[in-house]
Amino acid sequence: MSPRSDSYETIVDAAEAIVLEAGASHMTLDAVAKKAGVSKGGLFYHFPTKDALLEAMINRTVRAREESRRKILSGLADSPSRELKAYILTRSIRDQKLDRMGIPLLAALAHNPKLAEPLRKLVRRQYEKIVPPGAGFERAAVLALAADALALQELLSVSPFTEEQRSRIVDELLKLADESAL
Image (cartoon, rainbow, N blue to C red; front, side, top):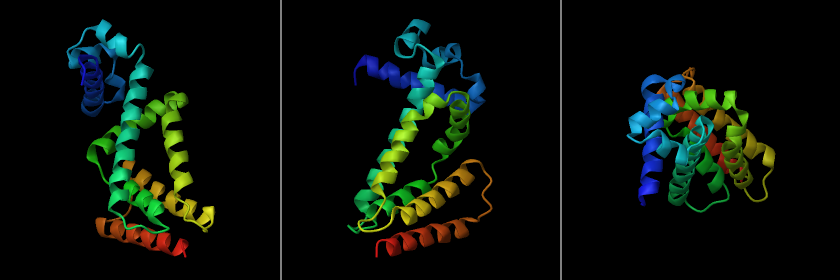
C-alpha cells in the first residue's frame, strides 16, 4: 500500500472509531484529523468535505458486505437458489462493528440522501442476481425483503426474536429459497 493509501485508510479508520466511541455528531473533520494523526491539509487532500468522508465509510461498508457475500457464495453448492441463499445468509450475519456503525450511517443517509447511491447500486445488483432461473422475481424479492427486515430490526435493536427463533427463521428462508427454484 502506498503512503497515500495508508493515510486514506487511517483517516477512514479514525472516522469510524470516533463514530463508534462518541457518535456521528462528534465526527468533525478536526476530530478525525487529530485521531488519525494527520494534518488538516492531509485530511482535506483525501476528503474535502465531511460528506466525502461519510461516503468513504459507506463505500467501505458496501465492500465489506460484498466480500461477505462472495465468501458465503463460494461455500454454497451450485444450485438454482445459490445467489438467493447467499443473499439471505449475508443479511443474517451479525457483525458487531457493522451493526454499531449502522445507526450513525443511517443518520448520515437521512441527512444527505445522495450518500445512499453506493448502497442503492449494491442492492440493485444483488436483487438482479437473486432470482433463480425460471422462477418468478416476486417470490425471490419477498424472501430477500424478509432477510432485509430481519437485519434492519436487529440493526435498530428492536427484534423480538431469540437467537433460536432467529436461526429458525433464517433456516425457513433458506428452505423457501430452495422451494422457489423448483
